[in-house]
Structure formats: structure tokens, C-alpha cells
Image 1: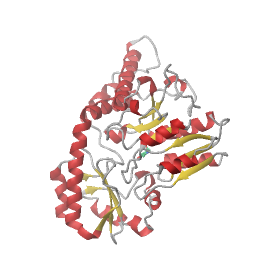
Image 2: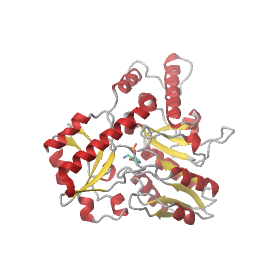
Image 3: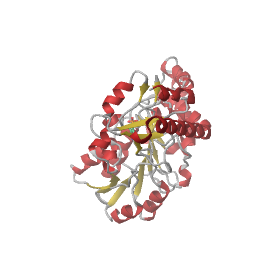
Length: 372
Ligand code: PMP
């Protein structure tokens, strides 16, 4: 079975499993307990993982808060900022191609008296800087724009967007779930990013674990926001709850491996993507249209229309030999809002498949397309 749905989730690397196992078994301590070795070992393991995630993002370890994944992080940042800064304003800006964990959170806030501007996107799903500038008001408290799109793979110009937000004095959050571990990314170079979301299972770590990057100032004071979870005060009081040590260790190991192999993986995925593009073109020539841009994109995501073929039927037909998807796994029951936002008709959306690669795939495996 050829797995081509790596934007939905990625397989756990064997090294990650090995790193996690002791923390499911003998090292079962609670990192918030004190003095005895089970607690100290668990705490050390969590802090090592935090350092590894911080190295991958190029930020300080104290700017990393562990969560249960990007859905939680997106909720935590958007609701947390909305609540904390409500006396300053109740206006939020996002785009209409965000993940449901951003869009539905914004819609929820609209029912609570917040006003949300949903920026339109170009044919590849990118926002315009001019529209962003024009939308920022005195009462804007947060801009939340994804780094890379999970269906099209297109990358927003986060440097310009974050600089604009900084210049205009607005907090900026980016959902970087699809780009962390996939592209070179140094938060040191983006002083305008106040918050970032990422998730371990998108870079060969375990599901149910992610992180929030919450920027600290030069004195180490982190950007304040209202916590989503109240309780024991773990994670500097921002995210209460006993830490999922085994999962966090897994995320740390996956981050370490992603950091080490980043350049190599980018080259490998680039080659795989080129091969897959060629195979699709050879096999289906003028029966396919690529919806994705070919530049400024996440390596390894192709979004392709098979003219006149229903995607649900195609996914089912391919299922015995190949795992692909019609788009986002988080909204697979509805036609893609992302493809609708870039101007595709319902028929075109229903003809579209997303292929997403990982460095674990080989060129030989892709040759299965020749026998379809
Ligand atoms: N944002 C984006 C862009 C995603 O692709 C996903 C996962 N599909 C999420 C958020 C949610 O992440 P998680 O699965 O960790 O909740």
C-alpha cells in the first residue's frame, strides 16, 4: 500500500517509538511531582523535548508550550487573545482558507460579539498584503494567517505579513502545522510572529501532541493571553493538565530528527514530487489540471483535478493499493472550502485529489502509477 496522505498524518518513525516506550512503561512519573527519580526523569525528558522543538523552530525553549495538537493550539491562541485583549478591541482578521480549527473558532467568537474579517485569497490560496493592511483597524487585536495551506501547499509570505502586523502594532498568529519540519523556518528571523501552532503527527511524531510558540520579550516575559484550560498551572499556567510525557518525548524526538534531516528531506521530497508530477502527466496528460502553484509551496503536496471523475469514487477505487484523499481529513464530509475560495466550481472540487508525500517513500514505489 502506497501512503500518499502525509498531510493528513505521517507514520511514526521507529526511533520516535523507541524514545517514547520507556515513558509509557518504567518512567511513568508525573513531571510536576518533585524530588524522587520518576518525577525528575519525566521532567528532564519533557525539558529535553522542549529544547528539541525550540531548536527546530529556532526560538527559546521557554517560548514552547505543549498542547494536544494544533486544533487545541489554534483554539488556545485565538480564544485566549480574544478574551485577554477584549478591552482593547474585538476585531480579528483571518483568511477564508484556514483550517476549521481557526475558522470555526472565529465563527464561535462572532457569536460572542467579536467581529471577524475573512480575507479573500488568490488562485493559489494566498492572502494579499494590501488587503491585510487595509483591514487592520484600531480595534484589531489579532491577525491569524496560516503559513502553508494543507490542501494546496501554497505558502503565504509570512515575513511580509508578520512585519506588517508588527509595524501596525497587532499580534500575529500563524498556523504552521503543515510547514514545521518541512521547510527551513527560523523564528529568530520573524520578530513579528507572536504565536505559532504546530503538531507532532505531521512530522512523524505521535498524534495528540503539539505545541504553541508564545513569544517572550527581551526580559523573558511571554505575550499574555487567557488560558484555555484552568487547573494545576502546568506550562507556566498557560495550559494546565498533567503532561503527556510519552507523547511529548515523541514530539521532541521527531523534532530532533526533522531538524537533522531537513535539507536532505527537502531534496528527497522535491525529487519525489517531480517524479509524481511526471508520472501523472504521462499517464493522464490532458485529463488532469494541477490546482497547486509550483513555486512557493510546501514540498510534497500536489492538488490535482481529474476532469470528469468523481474524487470519492476515485479514492475508494484506489484504496486497495494507494492512500490518497480528496482534501483535508478534518472536513472530508464537505466540499473543500479552500478550493471554493480559490474559485473552483463544485464539479471541479469534486474532481480533485490531494497527494502528499514524505521522505519515507521511494521513487520505485511511485512507479505503481504506471500500472493503474
Ligand atoms: N491546522 C492545519 C493547517 C492542519 O493541517 C491540521 C491537521 N489537519 C490542524 C490545524 C489540526 O491539527 P491537529 O490534528 O494536531 O489537531
